[in-house]
Length: 150
Ligand code: ATP
Ligand code: MG
Figure: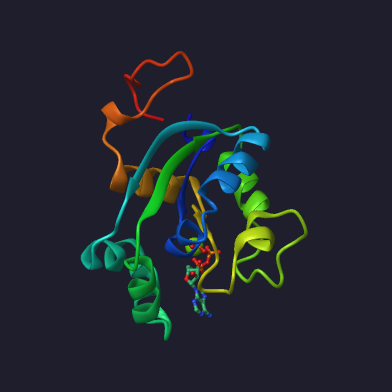
């Protein structure tokens, strides 16, 4: 099951631009199933931990500021080979380099305001999912709470 989930966030800029619906439509059309979802807002400490791999990068403080600037949608998505499939769907980090039809090409404003996050490995998909969701907030296709979380 591990390889079949990824974690995503619709970032504050895209939420502010009213892109939640269009982005969820792209996710749906691409064949992902929503396992878990919520509308929330990151506190500074949470954003710092979530992006701690970038703590030495020059854009880190700006990134934390941006990610805490407004509400976000967080979700766990399921599909075979979910991490790679979702990275393909969202496109390159820089929207100018993202392919036509990708979420970032369609909805991102810049490399920082790039509309969505997608996990970069199965291991991080699990860590990031656990960061936001308890097991009882995840549902299988038949609508039951997962006994063993994906
Ligand atoms: P994400 O982790 O959000 O899915 P990514 O894996 O495509 O994006 P990372 O290299 O992990 O890209 O960067 C994390 C986030 O940091 C990016 O999504 C973007 O918002 C921001 N970021 C990355 N590079 C830059 C940069 N050069 N300038 C400003 N912000 C950046
Ligand atoms: Mg990343």
